[in-house]
Image 1 (cartoon, rainbow, N blue to C red):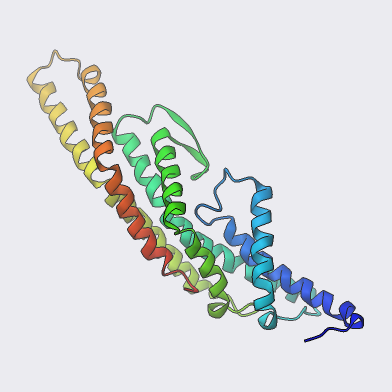
Image 2: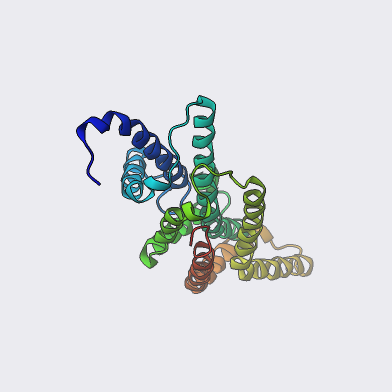
Length: 259
């Protein structure tokens, strides 16, 4: 449809507000999406990605986006609703991604590597070097398998499930977040299961040796064996861990709202 030059002053406020709503949902989701929302990515890159995705989505979504309301409170409510929708989708995607570094965090404690702690942006606190390494490995697998595109597709399709300007289903969103948190912890424990079993057997063996040979310095004998044995077991099982996590991430990301 042709637009007369005289219509631009009337259309620009509506276009600007509609674009702002798209930016709010996309930007809120990109803060948390696995791969694209990592703390190592500069803020300028995230802002550029947000504006680029919003520019791609806005022409398609513009007819369904609400007009600028006359009341400022209504405008703030619309912006808050779009931010909440984006954060909901991003959090659902982020929780499954956190299962892998969470499992590696368990491994770090079981392998005796908890003494060497460093800042982990994924958790916002200190973590083991092993958790950081495995977490970055998960990001690489995410991009290598193309799974990072599923949350973006869900973000584009979320407008069919959660139309802009509609009421945000806070109760359903909170319920799905709780379920996702429980599933993330369960997946982390499943990935760390072989190491937990090996750690229990190792500690029981040490307890038996300390009773049979009281003169033995258990700590100095056990720590090198614990670290070396744990790293050897990790080298054997890391491929299976990543494969199991990729399958679980594919199932979760493929079930995001909008897909």
